[in-house]
Image (cartoon, rainbow over all chains, first blue to last red; front, side, top):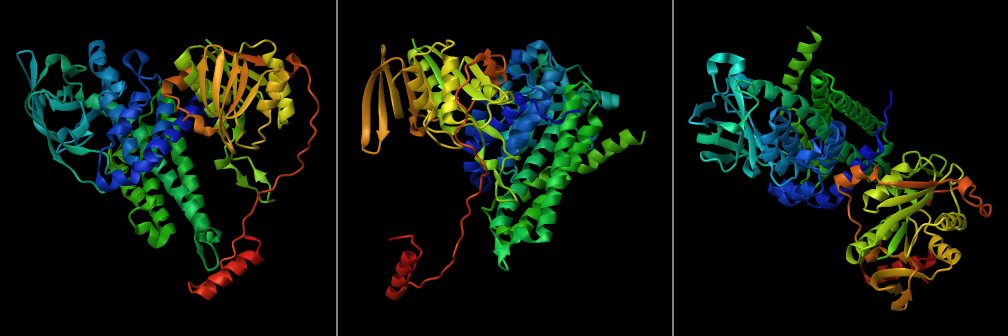
Length: 379
Length: 254
């Protein structure tokens, strides 16, 4: 048993912290307020090698383990949860399926520019009628003359308006049940692909979210990912590792909330002493520190299991649900510690509390995580 | 094409230094980092070789555990590292550090230009650079804010209290650089991952002649504390007079 990170992992974390302080901290409040996509920061992340961290060097990745990648997501999210999520959803959900299920040709063509940060990826699964219940999706794909013709509407697609490459899912044979859904790689310029409504969100406002509409959208047959009927398997596989990224993001948000709370509590004087001298505040901070460590160790364990090639589905769900819920709880406490100031725009904790909420919802709600965990421990 | 050797010190990151319960510095929580201006020294070596060609290396004196620092330094571009380390090399005085560096460099390590940060982030004694130059018998230019090369001649701008001094010197030379000289780059992910694969030559106390014993002994360290005396003054003329008198009384102004 060894809880130490490797020197490389520590350096990557340190460098990402410095990157975030230099390029992300100065704009985080502005892009939250305006909802502007920080394209310049995402391009810089790509240049620095952070947009394809855990994928093979031969396809433009950096070849790190998953733990190193998760550590980087945590650090980036500490400065800006939206930017951290942009990196995470691109890496885990768009690149993951192409890396894990794509053939060599698909990896050369799609994975390489994605890993290099020249292209941005999105994952279009959710539909208006199909959230946690993926089987309720209605999108279809029909093979016609060497091309798949896609029809359907995807919603809440993260990176949707700014992505170059989509991984999407549609029924190739509805009658085959779980084995009737297939996964496809769709470039943004595919005829019949349209970006629909852009959504205004409560938090992670700089992350871009939209509908993606396929209307007789034609893509080459070669863009089928895995084989026909593998769609659900592919979706579930990338959710497993995506959850590690979201857990790391939640830890980053909570860590930021705690750091803000500590510095405010030491400065804020009431009744003649800093409020950090009050036991109530001390206990809240102690609980934050403890829960953050728990969540961090949970996501690190899940990532470590994945890196060892061991099963990690249950552990990733545990990390995700625990990290998300403790992040929500403590970001609310952080606002409370700040009192009235915490409720004012421009205070970082105000943003953190709004950003925290989404971690309980996307990439599998807390309830979906509990289903996964229960299925594993009750069987 | 010059051989450029940059020196760095691995120091506690002041952002993580806490005040202990006894009032002493508490380094238990501290992360370590390359001393700030030494990052400028490494960056300047990279900029010079990008412009004029040449080879870059880093050298440091520290404890055997400071291997992360070696990787950090190498991730910033230099091709190789010289790591002078021994469990005995804790809390060295500048004279001792300079002696060890000089002995390692005499082993020999090729150099035309040696670059140091103007002072370290922890103690800022500004001693190691000039002492090292003296021991090597080469010229030393301090407070350097700009460097150009012209064949075997180096032209440097020195930022002094009296103004900017432009100095030309024949190589070899030792420079100590101020932070205005450049903006150190952030290592990319691939640079960080590749750093561990670059060659590192180690020296230990057994490889090097023993210098003098420490002349100073640190017995204690205390955290400086600031007290605030929140006094309120009005804005009328008489109150301003009171404020001035109060500042005089407390010795803030004479």
